[in-house]
Image 1 (cartoon, one colour):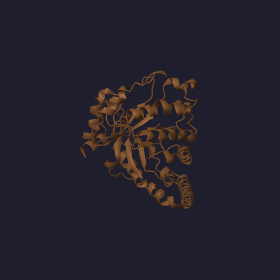
Image 2 (tube, rainbow, N blue to C red; image 1 turned 135 degrees about the horizontal axis):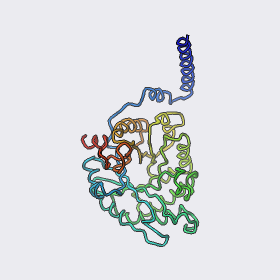
Image 3 (cartoon, one colour; image 1 turned 90 degrees about the horizontal axis):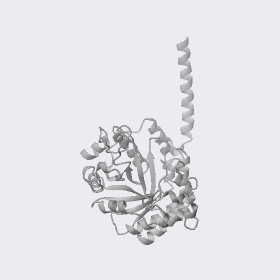
Image 4 (cartoon, rainbow, N blue to C red; image 1 turned 45 degrees about the vertical axis):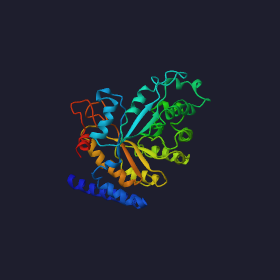
Length: 343
């Protein structure tokens, strides 16, 4: 009797779920086919190397000099796109009146080899920025632009291998206190004001260089809050002051791309090419499969994606926890590194 009851219960549950799914799909409109495909799983496909770059921060000398790391990216991995970080920190500018120390960033800029182009993300705040008395005209966003974005863009204006500047990183991340200092954590319009000021000033210095909006936290995660921040940036006019729309993509959650009002629908309203400036997977034995699933899926679903920057080139972390293509553990190379090197 128990087995008969269980079979009957399972049959009723399956029928109910089928009815719910049918109702949901019938309300999805153009997303039905995509959602049905996702139900069968996302297949692995060859990585499109022509669209692939990597994040490289050059802050861990155990992996080689800045020049050696650049050459490894170009010659061993055969990648031509790099995203670097010029962080505005206490070590760079310890007081509001001190001159910035560009030494490390000069080394990065001077080490870019031929055949490689670099976008630089400008972010972080020195600790003295937490005091409003140090803000230009009482505005922290104007201060960031005037004291960091403009000096950096002026200093490297003649470097043709730096092709653009990404203004800030993940402004919607509530856990980052610097977003609160800038007033952008929950106010996308404030971020767009900062982006607009940076865009106008950079274009007056080097009109040929790209200006990129800050990517939010992974656009496919924390639905719908993250994509709503992107919508708010769009509605505040961010498309007018960015040359590419940038996003981050982590994890899977492919259904949030295909669902009604999801990522795919959002990008139908964006008229800029898309660059994914961070995407990747932890674990030296998981990176290749992730790239073959997630990146192929992104490119198939969002045809305006021009580039994907893997996160990240090197990281001194355990093999099962590292984002790095190369790390300092007993398993120093990820499966994605080996694939890129050998193919």
